[in-house]
Image (cartoon, rainbow, N blue to C red; front, side, top):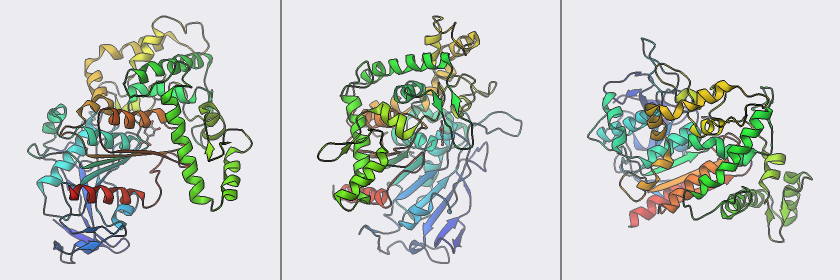
Length: 482
Ligand code: DHB
């Protein structure tokens, strides 16, 4: 293996390594290894037995240090291996061996122009990379029994899948096709998911349940706001109405009432928002008076934030959406009417680059209820109705939805530890998506699921500094004692 030293970041870096034997796109199907300088010498040899104490008081050697496996998936696009300079540096600074892994994505094509990166290609690639690491164990520092998958957004979705489907036979044919190491395991120790955009076929419902209050979406400051049409508002209403039945079908031990704004599930989501706000206030307000001023600034006279006598509370999701977070996407948020989203693109096929995937929308349209409404076209009903007839598509949808693999909790396929972080200002998907994933993992008997909203963060690696490494070192310490 060839190594070079990075002066700016004080680590050794490997050259790009293709992780499968029959790559379809070797530039994307490759990874880079970053090693904190304490674990290597200038000649590239490894200091196997040197004990290194990190800032959490954990001691690791080159044999025992966890490996942080950072995927570069964003917007379900293809990705080259993440560079040392961006999101990987914090893990290297924390003293972990860090892998930047590239993968195919929604737009990847081969030399003949054929689409080769549609779902589940990115997940298959991430699995192949993990297998390569195991096949080459000992050629670089790090404990291949302590691989921690990390991803944000679509990459967070992929990270949840990596955590739930280790060595699952559903992916064997795809792995064989790219020449992955078939005798190695792709199971991981832990999965960190930042703002996962997942459970895509239920995400439209979840979005309208949360954001139903608003007809105006503001994607970002550089695009014009969109206004949901009369038809979209009716569809929003019907999608939101269907969410309680979906939630109640999951047996989470929490229920959502038909109004979508009461029941133990609703209260639990609001409690997470409240917890996130109070953590923020305690971090930044040194006295009760300072916290009060900060809470008043958050509230801005809207009545969204209430004083309970003990702490500040947010109990009204509509007020929170209306006054604090705002709506980002038009209805439907994921399987869009004009099929233009990342998700429509990643579920495309070799012949159709963008495809619908939310069969429930097709069902709603099938009885003609929207026909007279402004903004509706009968082409929509025809288009969405194709989803249920496409067996290949249905399989591909299922292969990247973690909710389909939750029942594996407690088996060898599933990571021991899950950590999910979502920004309290993240309007890219409903809070219901990641929260439901966490609750479903717990309901299936998973012993270690750490979910939290991070106040004030948007759609990003939402986290307080140092908390990821404290979480990981704590798990490693505990597991070593067992
Ligand atoms: C991402 C963001 C989205 O809003 C989405 O729908 C899919 C992916 C992303 O940032 O990866």
